[in-house]
Image (cartoon, rainbow, N blue to C red; front, top):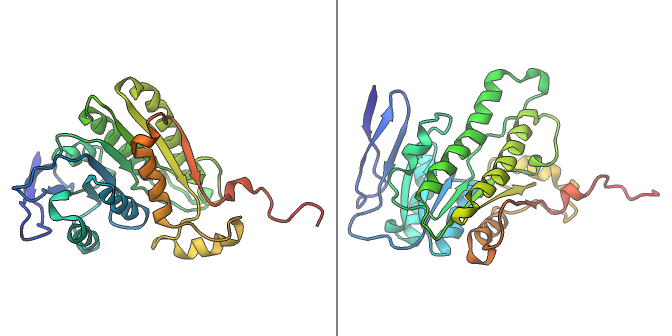
Length: 284
């Protein structure tokens, strides 16, 4: 049986809307304030409340998009960044939607408030890290549910809402789309699957002028992996971890008209890390 609940308002001027959800699932949305018609292009960014996702959300807002701000829940850690974005760019340009991406019913519900989608950035994901022999089928299923299936379903729904002039889908993978790392057996497999999914749907959506690419970040200093980024720093030829804003700049280019002839590609942004097989120079 379907259940209904009221989403918490993120500001005094926001119109709070009802969302129909499956029982036991937290999915809902807070609509943009009424009285302001959104005529600019719309970008949807998942995992938009922190790290790379927040940097992408900020960059696309700065580039003139209206934003679908997608988070897992509606608690304080998700609402704080939203309020900052609304304060800087205007409440009428940011629509907050939230839901559990491990539920296959969630992607369609997340996009229900939007009549048109021009850009989708599938950034949300799990970084499952365990030794191979300790991994469980629950680890496998949850990682693939969030990192692959949710992106697949969101891409389907977004493509249906993209205009006849086309659009752009960017899937955030990882350097582990291309290279493995001990402890990342399931994570790397999921990112590789998402990378190949990007290439496959790029072919199928080309006749709709919808471009699909993946971005594969390496060591990026985000709140979630600051310690790991510093530990891996010596393995990066450029001598530092990347910044979320640098990933966002690449995503913004892929979404722009300057990349109108680019589709089906995976862009590694890693300071040269994946090019370096052995750090010690030959002969030493």
